Image (cartoon, rainbow, N blue to C red; front, side, top):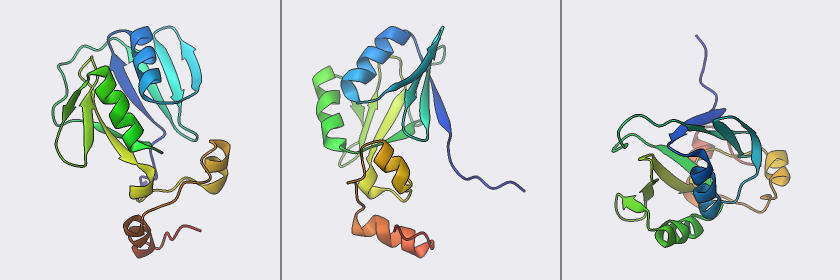
Length: 146
């Protein structure tokens, strides 16, 4: 049986590709990996976010995906400045984009996965670290960061 080892990309449907790229460009710093008619690919180092024009389903309530960032509070400020609807409460940062996609924002320091040192260097993020809790969780799985 094949074992899950990661996510290569997430495909996100939006109503207007140019408007989505403009909005996401105000929320996040990213490089455009590529673009073809009706689709764009936002680079995330060794992964990417595929943004596709043509959203047809209703807004997402519980269904969502999480994006990992180096500065969660900067995203919170940008989401508030854009007037986007935030969902959930407390320390979480979940918001709905104008097309009804629910996006959760998570700080890199708090998650169990690690980017390889060469990937972080290539992204200009070699300075990022982990919280004690995240390191503990990684150690318990035999994945202590080096």
